[in-house]
Length: 80
Image (cartoon, rainbow, N blue to C red; front, side):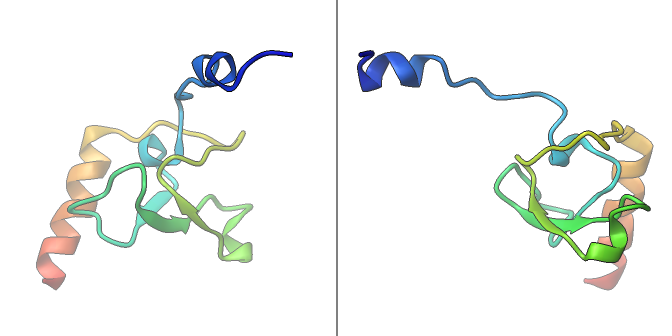
């Protein structure tokens, strides 16, 4: 039986998580990280009002562009 240490060595961070997805809208767009909560706004999932973290992921991933990040952060600064 493998030890716990061997099992931990097999854990890796996946790519294409919610934080880097265009459908993720974090509660705090200015300070979002992988532990931040946010809404999933993917059109077919939006009706479920999902709250996910930046480290979650699914098969609906679409990479966010820097332009989209800038726009989201500008809107957040306007509300502040």
